[in-house]
Image 1 (spheres, rainbow, N blue to C red):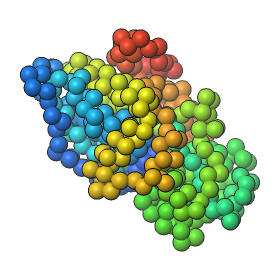
Image 2: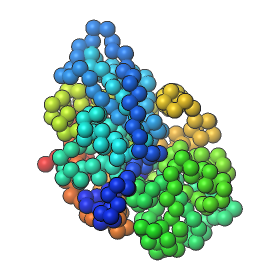
Image 3: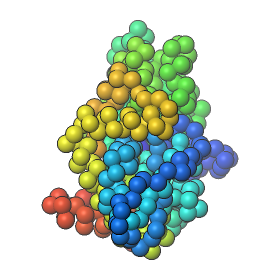
Image 4: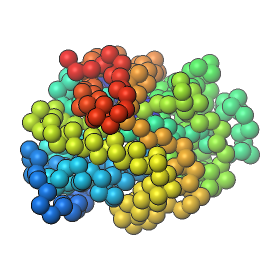
Amino acid sequence: MSAARPLTTLRTIAAVAALPLLLTACSYGSKATDDGKQAAVPAGAKKLSTDEVKIGYFPNLTHATALVGLQEGLFQKELGGTTIKPSTFNAGPSEIEALNAGSIDIGWIGPSPAINGYTKSNGKNLRIIGGSASGGVKLVVNPKKIKSLDDVKGKKIATPQLGNTQDVAFLNWLAEKGWKVDAQSGKGDVSVVRTDNKITPDAYKSGSIDGAWVPEPTASKLVAEGGKVLLDESSLWPDKKFVITNIVVSQKFFKEHPDVVEAVLRGSVKTNAWINANPEKAKASANAALEKLSGKALPADVIDPAWKSITFLDDPLASTLNTEAEHAVKAGLLDKPNLKGIYDLTLLNKVLKAQGKGEVSDAGLGAR
């Protein structure tokens, strides 16, 4: 939400370079897990230009394109004899590190780490090649303490982490309300409490926070604990859409294996089409994948409202990524970045055209 926008040089990060400031919208930690599983390759299927493609993603609903596409074999069908080696991550920085190290080739990731990874490498390590999801971010509050948007003033509201996607979005919303908050400390007319999504529900139950601006499924977990959705972030955006998950690829892999990249994009487009045509089956598939990865499926009172709030699409919504970056600059967290070249949508548009769909725009931020 995926939306925080890590930009070039971070004035505020200089003194805390080790701090994973720009986790994705769904970050829950910093470890990566190589699940070591490869999808079954059809007998006699022809390999593409490489034996294997290493794919990274989060075990999270906003990454359901990857969850469902792998679970249903839709990516493997497009890749033929080229096998998939999947790895799951709990934080954006670790996935970017894996991409830089060659541990993964293609990844599903939030906009903040994508921007941060691109700008920190001076535009040399990755490209955004497609979209995946929009939405899934809400302001959930204790209805006994907060009954209107104006009641947020003077309260304690959690965001996942300083400078992350939701943190920047909330700071921008506060500024538009005319309230003053120091971005670094979180102190001001509203107390912004940076809290890991894993413990936000417990913090809410204990009364140490009055609400949270968070992604799904954390938002729906809070609702299940008695919270009320006061604002859906999608209502703040044109057409109610903003990027929360992108598909990125290492530039080296993109250059060496465009046929594999194209096959993964075909799989992504077909997966999104299947999700949208079969929402209940897709929701069950995503939950089954989550259960395999985490050992626990999401209960119905969490996954049902969470699933409804996420839109799965191929368009990376490039203009919203640029706007989100501007929000981070305005908040004083980041220096203005040069994002020219962060997108290369050539193969995605080729795939979309072949399937009779319209092309998508890079909002003037296409590859140099």
